[in-house]
Image 1: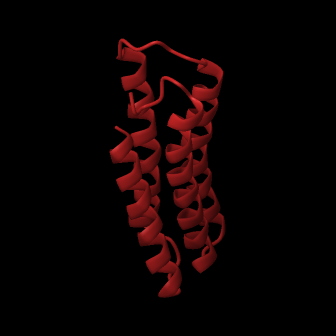
Image 2: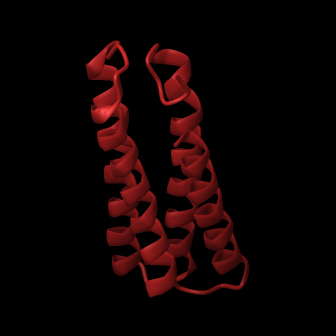
Length: 115
């Protein structure tokens, strides 16, 4: 599941960077990709709920998951409001943030996705 998070977040970040370089406003493709990133985080959280692992600190896990799901949704909202390349930049920056959230989660949460 962690690999899926890395791949989807990196692809959304690259797509957002392409939009910024080409000076394009975010369209439904980029916004949908951002929402797909939130969906991957949600599926990962549900998979964790069903997995027979020791839960570790649930507050840290759910804090990261809530943040990682809320950020791409907020990026879509920002890109609706900002109809320039900066809306695309917001999606790219938040997707990159989600890469680091996925990278950091197994380090600080003992029952992370990596186990």
